[in-house]
Length: 86
Image (cartoon, rainbow, N blue to C red):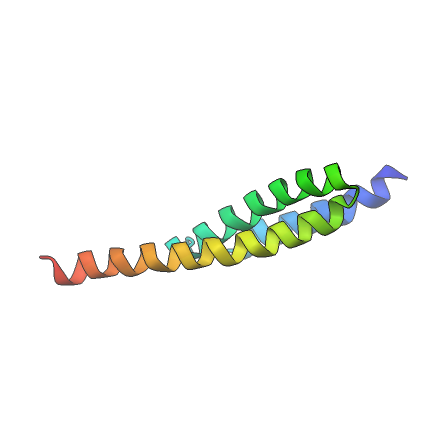
């Protein structure tokens, strides 16, 4: 029974891990970190209130958005430093 639940998850993770042919940009790394962190915190808060799935989904989406915005700013600064501050 457990194998039926774990197998699709492992397939999904392996497809994501092998699907990235190029290194992630700063924006993408920050979005992933924010999404995972937000899902973890949201799941913990949701578990305390009795809705761990909803908490993880809301936390993941919020963390993804926040991480992408912060990563975008970081990437913009890297670009500016690389091309304008020689």
